[in-house]
Image 1: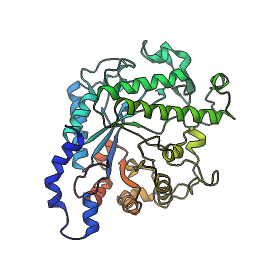
Image 2: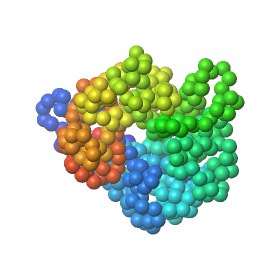
Image 3: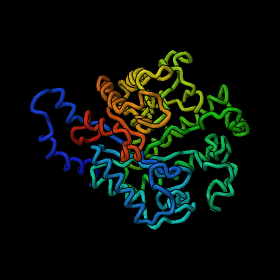
Length: 406
């Protein structure tokens, strides 16, 4: 059973009872399709498994608890990180099992997490979006710590150290093809609802360090005005080619990306947002996120607007309308990434200590027609909800379960 069919069966009977007797706006809000997702991160055991080395039964139990929490919070999609560091949470012929499962990279965990997640999510009326990180290889710079058969050891020329991590070099065509092949294996083998990329393309800048792809640029960069333009083209190619391969394999599988929310500041580019962010995806990550939407290369975008309303350098209330205008008329769905992890967290500014901050985000988003839902980072906070921010969102905005946009 697909997620849509399961959710229809689960919600049809409840909709009539939950729908207000009067008030057209309330009825529309109750029954309209909208995306209600949560990210379920596996890198460094952020959300799941709670620690490496649990038994298969313990891992499965924890995974199902997250899916059940999504249902209890009236969500309809889980964005499950299945390739966190050039590895796999399924039996991939391309890459080793992720060490976050057993504590040892390449060791079989005794079950198939992705297969189980797809099946159990759909049983609960949840979409399962398979989340891949294209280029991150390791959270250290020592290739010898990778399993001997790891592609990064077989092809050391593919890898660059930067900022204390190892990355595949996006400028090498063979790398771009390989990471697509590795991800497409999951697309072909599992009934996933979408492929999802996060915000990591070229790595975030690290002061005093250089991502040393000069030799690669010299080899492949002819015809570009500068290295930045060549780097952007490399990422554009990854996005376009991945989209085409997904549709060729399974036309109903969608492709979405959740970038850092600032494409460019208006002071840099008149088309940019009224922000003063220190990072701009176009310039620093070489990810031309605006173009991906305006040219319709992807099916949905989830800008990570991880700031509070009124935050001067990057105000949620200014970025939301900017993205609304970018998405208008493109056919690309706009969902908003929400920083649930900041709610009540030590060290966060006063607005994030207010359990109502996130609920106000959703209230504001109702006024923007292109904003078709929200995704919450991340599953641990959806479950634990330390200050009740998620409970407030549910109470204020999710009176009943609804289907995702189609």
